Image (cartoon, rainbow, N blue to C red):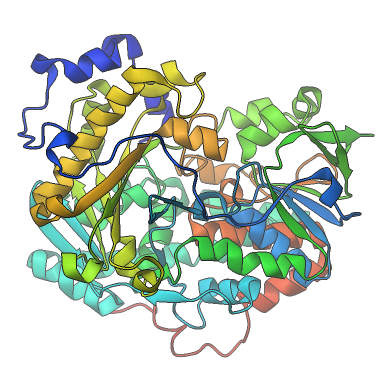
Length: 598
């Protein structure tokens, strides 16, 4: 779902959202056995208690220990990676995070004895020694962060009731899909070749963001002219097969990039598909371990990661970035300012408007769109994952294989079927869970949601948005819980706690204006914007994070690496080469994605 699609929704046609939710004649035609969450026993009520999971140090001006070689605004994966890489090059880096904990979408929170992940539900490739993801992870965490493999069948797609399970491994992927579509083996193998071909463009895509001008111009021209960079996922797959159900299964992870196949970039789809083809991995100790494993690398040269540290603006002096002004008024100076806040926040909020206009950022921003908003239902259960039979895998549930049509129906009717529902079982994926949390378990359920449905409450404080807002949340919570219990009815007696986040929650905690989850839309047009790179026309100001590369943990890590090169020049390029090309002799594991024959 694109933000533009949600923006263009005729909210007047929706009328009052709360009225639509409660209108019998507008209810979904599909049966929903769970009429109220009151039907679930032992459901506690009362005010929310603060999360006890915290990473980083609470900001106080008196705790500053400058001068700093660089200041990073935001502690998401891109910001932490940039700061860690600079620290490894001997720089003293200050990271400023406005939230109460560091990590961005990699952080976790704890409430009522349960722990949930905000954005990290699984990561591909990172557990395979020798892969780029593994090398980056080892470099910035110095071996402190370990990953647990998920089940061999790591993703299951349920499309209009029919189940399709992906098996880890290239040959496993081909064989498992061929079992479902025996007449389509040639198309499936050709698909593997296509995503491999497209994935090989990534190195040039990264170099195009940091290379000197003549090389950069040639790389960008070649990439923008490449047919796989220009086409949507659906257009490429229709050239391989006319089987709509096979296309739906091949693109069943579209929620990982935020756009359905008819509007997403095939390059981004290929990166996701290749990323997970050897299975998924989960951080041992939960996603909060990610920030906690990287922060010591930043601190070893005198750097620090401060939380509750909201930057009011970037200070511009003599046409260059010279520091940041905090909301308390204090100014912290540094020769390098690096924004991990996203391009919209950076050039509409942090950089003075006259400077943004002079650098033509209003026009540039009009060429990209924010990604989708989402709902997350966080569930706590009074039994461990093994007792409950929770899998170390994910469910993707779709009402049909017509993804774009389902999105349109949903945007126009709050009671329509969710176009996708993703279910994750973090307590089953983490081998340290029982040691840390005893005989409990957690489940996370995610579904898209237009920001406009919640816009009328955007000026209300978190936790104080009133009964209509809570009624709307209860409506969505009931529907999502019903989907879970339709699939796993035996869980009902064990459910002890739940809470729902909305795009307003994302806006409040992550400071994204429209509550978007993936930064910018991953459309073909987005990947043709050559200005989405670390170096800006404003001297001393660089960008990092998912907006300048791609969404996801590894995409943001790569953004952090290329940003380091942009800031440090030759020293950064040596680091880049060391990580990207550790040896000219490719190992057997690194060769595992070579092309296969039908």
